[in-house]
Amino acid sequence: MNEVVKEFFDNIAVNYHHDDSKVIDELIDSLLLHEKSKILDLGCGKGIISEKLVNKTKGEVIALDISSKMIELAKEKVSNPKVSFINQDFYSFIDHQFDTIVCFDAYPHFLDVEGFVNKANELLKSDGILAIIHDIGRGELNKHHASHALKVSRLLKTPQEEVKPFLKYFKPIELFENENIYKIIVIKKG
View 1 (cartoon, helix red, strand yellow):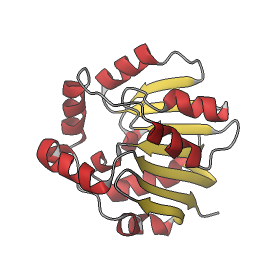
View 2 (cartoon, one colour; view 1 turned 30 degrees about the vertical axis):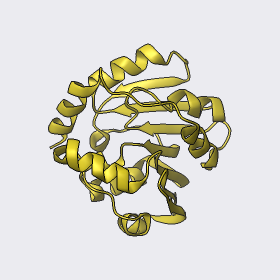
View 3 (cartoon, helix red, strand yellow; view 1 turned 45 degrees about the vertical axis):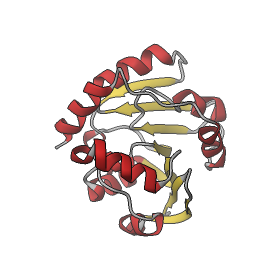
View 4 (cartoon, helix red, strand yellow; view 1 turned 180 degrees about the vertical axis):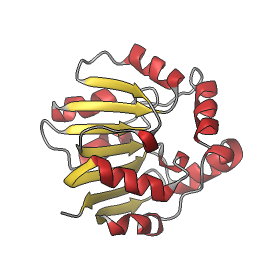
């Protein structure tokens, strides 16, 4: 199934457009990011938030995406030496532990939720933060995925429902949604 997701994003990479909005800056400002953090920008796409994360923390950002085309375009856009782009499937990704994992506008494309939870737990340090954020409301996002990408995504539930599989390893910090934002922020249990 991950090959289908990869192929889908490789095919739309060149035409994939995302406005660099004030909402993105507000979402990043709301995250519990610490100076010099090691951050995984999960499902980084064209690197929309990669440099923003470095600028916020002055730390190291590993930007990971399954789509080689998205990674190519991200490398053209972002030249900060503190950002490393890696083209790999998250479920088989192995690295040292991260302080924070930020999954921006990508979470519905991780179809194996239990595998996602287990891998996030494996990659985060004790007390590490996992942030699933979208700069679009759940209603609009689900409508978009239902009409354009249902084979490679799933419809989101409320943050309170969506967080349930995470509770074996994580404690919720913030579960929030409105018409413009969807946010699940959890901390790994110590």
